[in-house]
Length: 113
Image 1 (tube, helix red, strand yellow):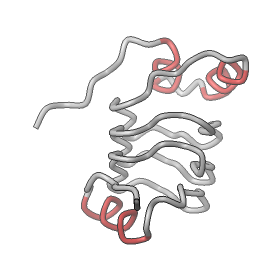
Image 2 (cartoon, rainbow, N blue to C red):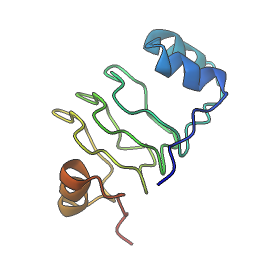
Image 3 (cartoon, helix red, strand yellow):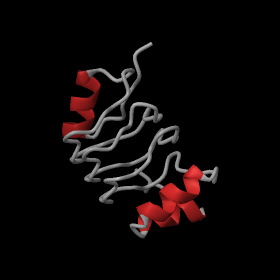
Image 4 (cartoon, rainbow, N blue to C red):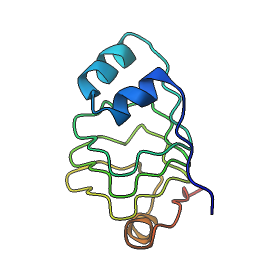
């Protein structure tokens, strides 16, 4: 199994460095964030403005997503193994079973069609 990529994108690096306020400010100004299929494992993402982000195929293992609104975020193919998701809103396209399987076993989440 290959490691998830560490992208060379400024917005990605802001998240890796824990600069969520700066990330959110730039995002609100229209800055694009290339976060698809990247490594966000173990990061504290509380307070992230995730609205409209594409986190498809992203690794979120043991990330702290408590209270994050992910309803308008693409999470198809993402893995949340061991993540903290208390109080987080998740996309309606994800069934409770998909979320549980990913949370407990690291499976990639599939949207209902």
